[in-house]
Image (tube, rainbow, N blue to C red; front, side, top):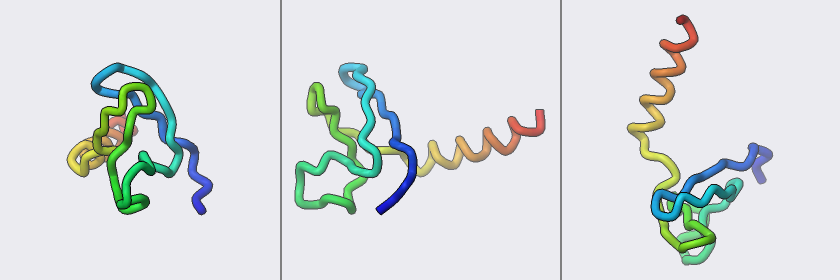
Length: 67
């Protein structure tokens, strides 16, 4: 069980903001291995975060901290 703060998401389709914590959608058999998040309002599914965006975020934080 993780004690991490809930992750906030914004649906790319309807714009609804929501939090799922460590859980993705939980509506399919993939369960914990699935990296998709399902919007509770419209049902749109999207990836939690791409590896490329995560890498750019780390890079921006590294160079932004020295400015």
